[in-house]
Length: 73
Image (tube, rainbow, N blue to C red; front, side, top):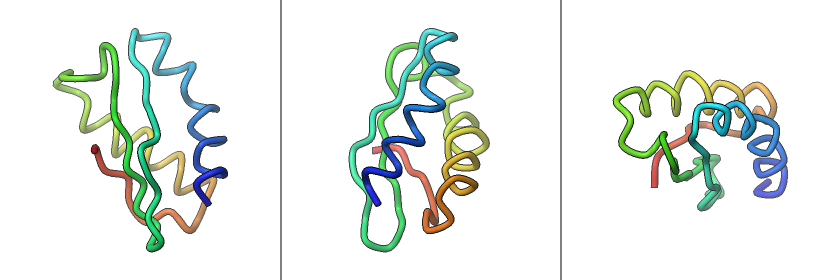
């Protein structure tokens, strides 16, 4: 599943990079928890949690139904 998550993250990466940010996949647990690290402008941004939940998590759940949650590592 980690490979499927990485492919999906690569699809949304250009959107984050357009705003000076990026995302790095850290881990995917057996129970569908995806751990990511926000980089660049996303790191420390007041909107980072919204980006994580409303952007990345929503997209990954749509692409990969096994994903339960996305958290910041």
